[in-house]
Amino acid sequence: MTPLVKRTGRARAALASGLLLASVVALSAASFTDNALLNFGTGAAGSGVGNPDKFDIAVLDAAGQWQDAASPSGAVVLSPTTGAAFSETTPVVFEATFLNRAPGVAGDLTLRLWDPDPAATGDLYDQLRFTVYLDGATTAAVTEATAADVNAAGLVFSDVQPGVEHRVTISAVLADGSGISVIGKTTAVGVMTEGESR
Image (cartoon, rainbow, N blue to C red; front, side, top):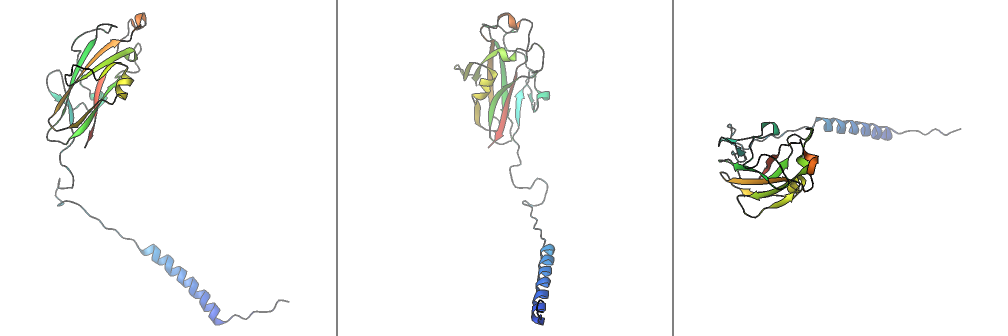
């Protein structure tokens, strides 16, 4: 037979206080919530911390007006400066001028080429070879390169201040040996700058 153990009142009190303590801790943890809200600025509209000016890049359209052209669907359409048909020897030349509008903030502009109609049947964009000149330079920044190579070249206008314009001249020819594989094919060529404020 198992001997009976007589429990003292002290053990029962300790056990009860332990349960009571656990319940107080749980209640305390659940009831401590806090918020501290802070607005920097005076509270008036436009008084927040930061620069009230924005980084706003525009492109010059054919009518001499600055356009935002912030998405592919809103792209400015420009005709070639010279040339009307792609060939392996005579380039088609495009020019675009970009502006960091003022007032604004300084930033870097990375030049990119893109295909506005990549799903088009008979598209010859990938068969073009591009030579790129920046700001009227006589020496090309990139020569006879695919669009992917132009984009990988990291052509950047650095620290472009508000009110400053940059011009890009792109010359495009068909890749050597294209021959009859390009007959009846066309393409559009897209030029954009990806801006990042400083």
